[in-house]
Length: 195
Ligand SMILES: C[S@@+](CC[C@H](N)C(=O)[O-])C[C@H]1O[C@@H](n2cnc3c(N)ncnc32)[C@H](O)[C@@H]1O
Image 1: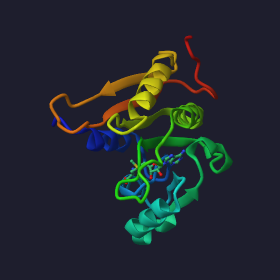
Image 2: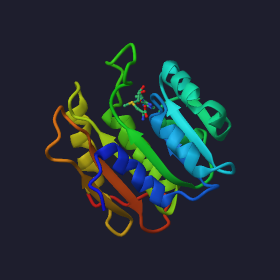
Image 3: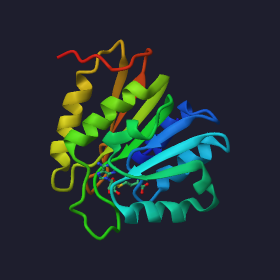
Image 4: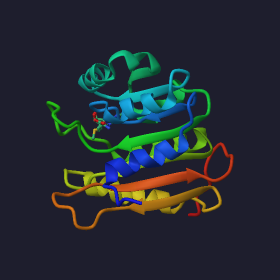
């Protein structure tokens, strides 16, 4: 096995889970790198719901998708409203937290409260054995606070409900992200918290 960096490892977690024809969520579309990856994996019969709060991000994602746009719903809304748009079980979800690379306003970032609410909701929507991969950045304003809040939350998920893992590359420069990977271990509508 190769020791992958965090972003390829996050995609690998999803690749191992998603089957053609399934529904998946990109919670932070950004420039669409993950959205394109998911659209390729779900195949012609599957579908990707891609969220972003910035129109420029969804435009950039649409451009990257090209003809695969037909497999994707581009949703200009916060990911914690996912249940307004998706009402069937999903097999996976990906988050890449922080700000839009090359965007005009790098102060528009993901926030602890909405990120945690979205993760909690998506855990309920996952099919059994579905996974969520969250790449967390700590180098920007608010990033460490968000990462710490998210770690505090995922550590409380009941071990019989969700397998929770953290992955990081220890010798990479310039504030590399770390990964939180979640696997749903049994069917439930809402995960149990242990405190
Ligand atoms: C690091 S970028 C994502 C990069 C993307 N995965 C890619 O492949 O290019 C983070 C994105 O999250 C978006 N974002 C911030 N808060 C959000 C929210 N509450 N709901 C959905 N997207 C949000 C930002 O606008 C930004 O585009």
